[in-house]
Image (tube, rainbow, N blue to C red; front, top):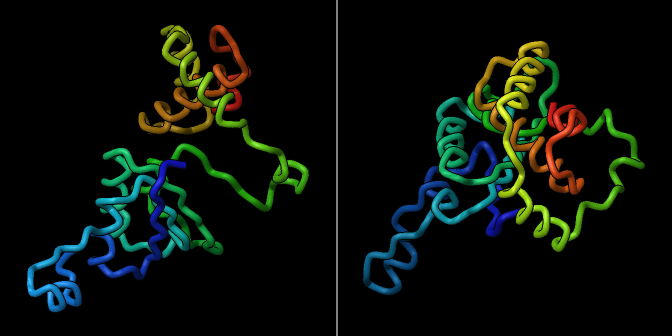
Length: 178
C-alpha cells in the first residue's frame, strides 16, 4: 500500500484530518506552527468502523479518495449498519471475511518484482470497445449502475490480465473483476 498510512476512526477530531494550529509547538517556539492533517499527508486511509461515519465525514474522505488516496474501509456493522454510499461507490472491492476459508486467507500476494513487471505490461495491454461493452452488460446483469464501479471493475480486469501475463484480456479476467 502507498505510504504513509493514516488510521482514522469515525470520532477523529477535524484537526487530525485537516490539520490546523499546533498550540503546543506554537507556544514553545513562539512562532505560529501549523500541523498538517492526515488528509494532507497520507497516501492510504485505513477506516475502522467505517459504517459509523457521519455523512459529512464520509464525504470528506470520499474527496480524498477522488484526489488519489487509497482507502481500506472496515465495515464492522451489524444488520442495518452499512458503509455510507458515498464511500462504498469509491471502493473497488468488497471482501466478506466470513465467506473466505482459512486456506484462502493464507495465500501469498505477488512479490514486488511480479507487480513491477505487471505494471510495465499494463501500458501495452490493448483496450477493446467490445471488452468495455461486455463488462457494462455484466454489470447491468448484476444490477450495478454506477459508472465509477464499472471503471473500477475494468481497471481490476486489466490488472488481473497483466498479473496473469495475458497479452489481452480474457473472460476470466472480467469474471474476477466482477
